[in-house]
Image (cartoon, rainbow, N blue to C red; front, top):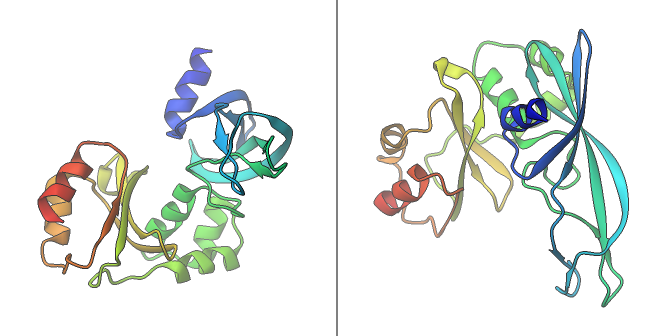
Length: 219
């Protein structure tokens, strides 16, 4: 139980319950499910906690301890009692139709900041070269013009000796604007101080105190 709790903290994924862990010389398979909670129907908006069935999804995550990490997620499919619509539960770490976590995409982008080839990065994270290129093409490498909606989040990494890196995205268009090696207030201030910020109307972040404080000071 303590080992599972430690793994949940290591994963850094909120609301995830670890049910089993399988490990061999090359990989770690983590079996997980989300905490059950009431959902609202995507069709009529009615609240429901009725589970229709379960599906299994295999998700690739960032490597750990020199091994490839895969999350085997047991997903619930809910059913609305009012209109009969069936829909999957929500989660914060996996975009719809994706088979890798948000932070794996951010990890790939961070690796490509160095002098690494697409092939070497693909081999390290167990993705195809075409997938790595597609992630690379998603990035806007100039954040000089900020979007109307701006999202800031962190992910676990080891760039510049820091435990967490910061990812800046345009959530409306699904575009990664930049990856910052640090998430501290003074670093964010230095990054944003010379950018035009008046067009930003929506700011999305978690409740880590640095982000709301930064928003109040600069937006």
